[in-house]
Length: 476
Image 1: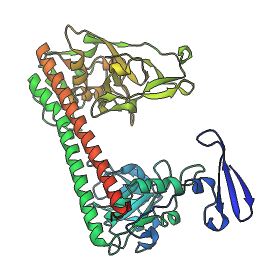
Image 2 (image 1 turned 180 degrees about the vertical axis):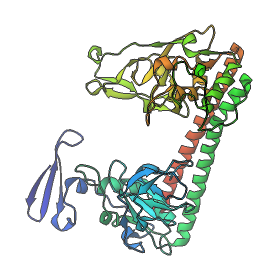
Image 3 (image 1 turned 90 degrees about the vertical axis):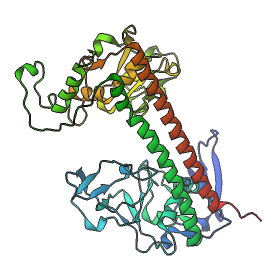
Image 4 (image 1 turned 90 degrees about the horizontal axis):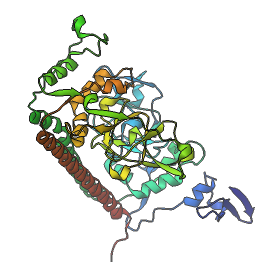
């Protein structure tokens, strides 16, 4: 980027532009206030609202915005400990139910959140992300990478401003304002300049009610999808004629020497694991290694003729649906773990944290992809005894995932070897039963996928509608 002063204007040149040619533009010196980087002025676009006045966020607060705690995060071991709300804890729709919180050490009381505090992420890849604090049942404090705004509800409803931060107009503002050098960043003073189209509170209430209803509908569909998938385990057990064992979380227990021929660590012999093995003992179950074998076909980037390849890593597997996705990756940037050649109908099983269920069947569309060495690749399946679709389904059930956790080793990142994975017991019922289970698993996952897609489509429509209500000209 180069800058050339001339008369009353300053000329900027950014090279290269999108078309590979230098991009020139000019601004008046009197228009330069606070910022003097080319990207800011190249992208600057005011929100052109024909309906409502634009009011700076800084004019809507009831106290000066402030930064959060710089304390370190530590495990939360008691319900009396405050929750530590960090950027990584919240997403586009707040914090998911069942989220596992941490706490802070030390606790700074001036960082405690109150009802309707609005947090803005100030740096990193998630700069601009927002969170509205609504759950006050447990004390919470917020972390230093967030900025807290407390709004004057008599002028601007916190939920209204929060919904505005979910619009494309807000996303464009974030792209414009975040500083381009190094780590993306928007500071408190810059957030205070955010212009919000502000109708009266009666209209704000109407718009908020519509968005709340849309969010409730979205969440209902997502819950319905979750219930479908969560109930699959019970369906499989009932179809196999198995009864789920009662919960046993004993921390003190004993085992005989005969019960510990290979491993003698307490984790392996937890009563909960032993219960599953006893349950499977009454059913016709066989080790995975007796009905299937692993592929070790290696992909060599030096022998790849194209400039890119399709890469499947562990994070590319949707844990809920068991679907894998590939990312087009330059061969020159191939990760060292991108070495496992996979083909249609292979079943890939994550060896790292296997109990999370990153287990997928490679579809014909993914034939020829490259998978991470963090997967075991099941290729040869004895289909005279076990159907491939059924095997994929049963491996993703709790009875199998628990066995994988039992046979894994390691602290925070437990991993299982192929040799131990081969020992996981697989129920092998009749072919008709296998077909019924596989068919029901596919039906539930297809239905869950449809519900989630509908929920997301409706949610995006609602956000566009909200933005149009604020920014579209009044029709005359």
